[in-house]
Length: 447
Image 1: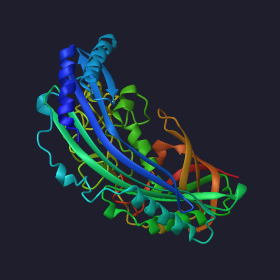
Image 2: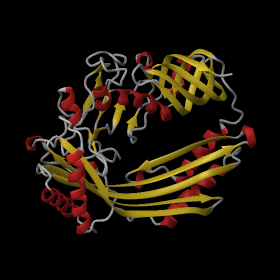
Image 3: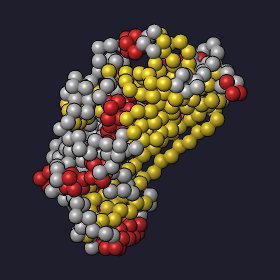
């Protein structure tokens, strides 16, 4: 097994030798196996493994990034020389630069994050069995005509980051996933739906039988879908798509968007953007969560923070560069790939849950649309004007009466966010812990 710390140090040494003023290096070593089955037999199997390395060099206020998958000494030296040559020709950016040493995280407890499943790695045969069991469970649901996809996967990934400011640290993360897509009906009346689960520890994973059954039941419920009426109606975003709505808020408070002025919340800092009883919290330190990490992509400490507190927007999502541009400190949200410089990004977020069940929200809505799937989007990031394709179920008198598809929902995000009423059904193991949401003020374009 390659020592990633030695590899990043070798990259930094090569960068200094080539003339860089400062540099940081990232090494990622990963193995992944995925298996798909069809009609109980293996359809596709894929295994990938290898190391990716990335180097960012800084010369004054200029920077450049290079990456490679070869770790020979000659390649490291060539990477450094090319990066330095590129940086000398790059435009100046007054906001770039490594963290000051006194800003770096000094101690972290990666074991507390519980990011590694120490049980034996799953073999391709194990994954094939899981996928086949999920497929069989879906086909056992009355009304399912076929399963278009059933797959399982396993991954094991190590990451190490080092920089010339003295930071060096790494961690490992494992994950197991299982999914199934079922179909009901034929030809133009064909409908499909899915279910899947992904966990760091496979002991936490839903059983293949549950995955297949839920996919099948969701699919059969969509049989005979028609278009909903056109008009202004309230809408419930089911838990499985509600995170997408909150994702638009997260994009709007991302420092990169704020620095460009390309966000409908650009003037909203310190203002109310959600109902007063709701908060949106990020916590990168939650155990057994795929988004958790002991430090950010620039070696800064990570902590829980309120993005929105009691309805009020409290801050932006910042890395060092966007923070400097906005005259603020980094929030410890830098994310980094081997071929790109750091950029702000959130990890685990949680919206305050409500007391009501989804069924309670249906009763409160009365007549309207329950969205369970979304496709495409037309969103103006600057104005918040929102339009997305959707499918789900039409609700009358608080009860689901029929499945619907091929419709569009439209509104303005700033207005929509102020009307949110959450249910209590958020899953606690996913990256966006957002419950089903009742939203007012939408226009539905159907049949």
